[in-house]
Length: 175
Image (cartoon, rainbow, N blue to C red; front, side, top):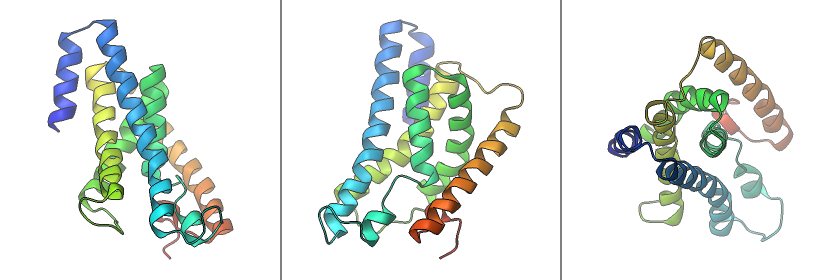
């Protein structure tokens, strides 16, 4: 909360395009790095084949809603995209905050996976708040309806992936 509010206040008071670009791009690449590191660290720790397609590899792809919203927010930050910022804001505050409060973790405190999980899941609400409150890229009329359509699309695609891989991305299949 402090990071999100602090960065937002800083951006509102210091409207230098250089400062804004530095914060936007740094935060965007931090989110992308966290999304990219998560499956790699999981495979290194739990995978039984370095280049195989086993259960661990199939279950650590970036198809969870928090992964998708991290990528959406990263692109919104880098490109200053209003539509991506709006869906990232609505999904990020509604979904990823829940993941922060009730995480599903297979690893303990101090492990790289733990740190990456909280970098990503903590970075999403920070990015969402910075985009809307710090940069003023706000949701516009019809945002809720668009979020519902995006959600249906995510669910349809993710359930297809779940069916084909035998997984439970998005916690949609209740395995």
